[in-house]
Length: 379
Image (cartoon, rainbow, N blue to C red; front, side, top):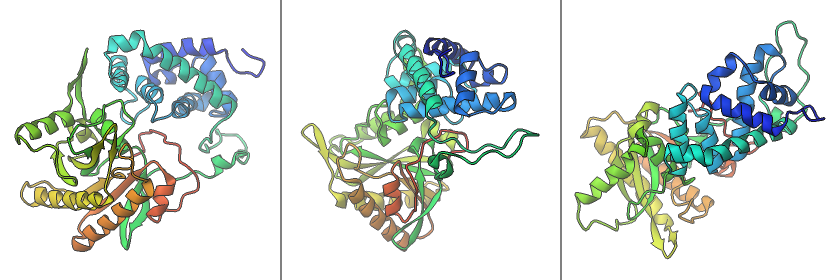
């Protein structure tokens, strides 16, 4: 134990390696000594009655410190079951999911990246214990007096993570400050693609990469059994010789793969990025064409295909590796959504972003940049 009351990092690393096998449910039986000390020091728990929940909260906060866009942070969430619906997954399934983040086999991950992930998470736990990043308020244990007021301003200004009311022009939309793969019960998710329909690698921190990773079905020793989205796009191209490159703004539908477990029915791939040397370029006008194409495709699948589609969610098309400024993408997206809803208002439209400044462009007032807590309550 260090003079500041925090455990040694080596002790915490050893405990986290053991916890990786048992998973978060094991905390309900026993919170190991080093993790217990860090949890209590940070104020994530006040005593034995909320120690297990507090230990889980500090692990989530530590993984977020590593960055949900970062390979290590994302792999830490997978390794310890910190993503929605994955808390009780067996250790082997969690390891496979973490290996998929890096695009390696489970065995390769076990001998290489997993060690680094656990060590980095231990360091983030200690950092969180020293300087908590804004804990949610918790009720005092039975018999205790009133809890003191939060000293941290960030703890007093908790920003809603998802489901914020916004507007595209005069039309209401719902804005989500969330990674797109965590959304739930939205019929159609839209992915931004290039005109060659080559999806982003599954380990890339992009909308395309996140959806590809989340839609993969099944696992084997050498990776996903079915790379559903990429496989369906490849089949679509093979059935249309000479179709590539697509006209910018073209929309190609696929099934949802494993995203169906989250209530997603379809994924629409909007081809807006045109290769330009080693980078891409995006014409904002093609965003408008893609949005119109998404609504047209959804109407056709609803009327001709018998799919009960009612909701659709757009990311900022072309604003990632496409290189377009977020403000420009948001403006064109908003105009196109308003036009579509003016012509056909029978849709529930959602916009997803990680950036509060983008939410403001859709009429949402935010206080601070949200911390993306991947809890089961997040859609």
